[in-house]
Image (cartoon, rainbow, N blue to C red; front, side, top):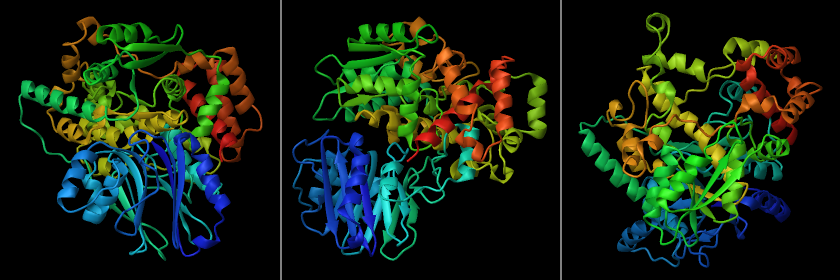
Length: 587
């Protein structure tokens, strides 16, 4: 894993090396092992490296050994060995054993189509000096980030994190509509940033930029296509086991030790069990618990003992308010997932032992593991009739997941023009069925990249830990997405096939226990003395959020929660607190 930067434009020579160094300094946690800079007359590429593959020969940025092109790359290409053999048959000559060089040769062979041939998690930038063109791309699900912006001279700046653009002198101008999306979802949608003048390359997109252009040209190279499969349950389970085993195998490739994050749930237990098959030593596994609130430690311990891993645990406490500020400060954008905090703690624990860890992220979205997938099957008949007449399951789902409803946000904003509904995304928006399929598509294209993968990337990179997600292998995802819905969930539970697979490893009472989740116990934590003090210090005075939000509305929510014990208000307070902490720490 690495931090990458690129600068392209006619005035590159005017940019001091100190600005470039400052950008790389800000990405040091993403890559503490090495750094490099490669300059061309119209472009500069840079990288900070976390060495995982080809420890001695994978230095970046990497220049091609035959053509005047170069690449800076963040991520892992899992099929690079197979890709290398294919490209060698086509006449390409390799100088290293790294997956980085496979991207260079793939770009030379396939041009703008090269991301289609890459199996992995990645954000990369190629400079083609002959064409005077910069080409960049992100992986299919958006595991690895890539932002860009322009300075006052029209020079394009790209980087893994917004803080690097800030170090380059690009001061972000807050976009009120993006803040409104955050107040709705508790995260920024993955097709935008919190700043009007800083942008993202969306997941599954590539972008080309030629010198003299004032904006990149975008192209989508992949999407989940609906091609329903007619297959028996037994055959579907067999194929999923094959695809999942292959996905785990590919993600065990490294020249350093690999561990795993083990929550004790279905997803992470399956990942650890399959990963142990490819490890010659007991896999190191890591778990965090929540004192007496939510405690998965006993289940994680049981899974570890059954699988035979070398297990490490940590007990999170509710008095670490300074840790919350630290995590939010690193995020670059407002992000209020309550599991940011424990994810940060377990990442720090894992990073003390290994450089790479596997996780179970993506399984709930692919295999419909959330309660909202079957919620509408179980509501009262009168509610079903109402939904059929004036609403639909998808609209009801958006209401369910929204922290602040539109009428609440209009009261919250000093300028209610900021209120908007740009939270669905083009692919889910194009789905006209408004049913479970649309909810699932929203989860895979908005919720997963915007909330979950952003959380995992930032909290792991804080500690120079690479996290790999076997469930997000794109071939596995394409297959599972098109299976009959009844193979994934029924009217009472989800992840049916995964639980069936886990029954071959763990006892039934372990497999079918009630899902607890990984989020912190927010309502309880907000009532502790330390958190209550923090909330009133940050939101009770001259808070920065009151530059654009109404203090009276916020005060009402505080009163509802702390004086009237309206428990449904707790996430509203949490989202406002995280926003204030972010504003105080932003670059």
